[in-house]
Amino acid sequence: MKNKQALWMVLIAMMLLLAACGGQSSSTTNEAASSSEATGTTETTLKVASLIPPMTDMLDIVKPLLKKDGINLEVVVLSDNVQPNDALANKEVDANFFQHVPYMNQYNQSKGANLVAIQPVYDAIYGAYSKKYKSIDELPEGAVIAIANDPSNIGRSLQMLAQAGMIKLKDGVGMNATQADITSNPKNYSFKEVDLLMLARMYDEADLVAMTPAYAKPLNLTPVKDALVTEKADSTFAITLVAREDNKDAEPIQKLKQHLAGPEVKKFLQDNYADIAVPAF
Image (cartoon, rainbow, N blue to C red; front, side, top):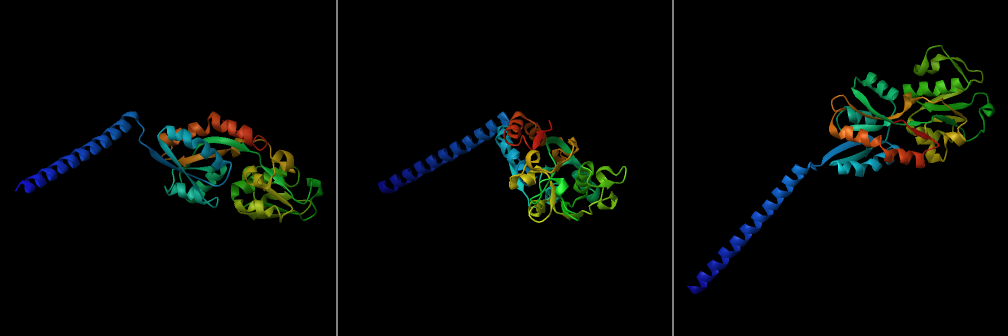
């Protein structure tokens, strides 16, 4: 009998102990949640699609800054120059950072999308490069010139070559120029339109390749030192943070805008990309 009483006392003591521990754990969790709510540190995930450096580098720079704002930045690196806009339009990501506004506008028109520019971040110096020749004058008759195949960059490339006197375009076509608008091509250049991500590969194959420094830098090329021709300065083509009409004013988007136009990113560009990019803020 005494043994049974002793056993019951032990069981009751254990139950009380477990109840006390459970109550303490719950209290701690509630206190932590209350503290988090009180300090406004509840973390929000912000997904941003991008492609290659230096865009991805700049997102990595602002990631710890956003963390202090209670925002977990998730960089989604995609494999071509259409996916980031598709992902944004389909609400698979919250923003993207890889393009200039004319490219965004062309996407909106072709897909009926409502993407909007949030913050221009840097102007990339557009240039044309050759592995075979040292000057434009050396380009032979019928030389193959590789250019990006999307409408905004076709026009940009042709305008740059027209400014350099290599071809002539119809009056007034501006950045909407296509090969059909070439009115004079004295050396019968052949233009090969390829995907943006193929431009670096074309450096080995074509006689001349028109591309932004983001694609030239991995080849150890810079517009100041290596381009045979560069475009005139034009902030129209600044690489820009882009979101949707329905989330453009959301606090995480605005915080990202603030940090991408902040001193940390400006210093990064000046220290690492001064010869190929200029801050646009």
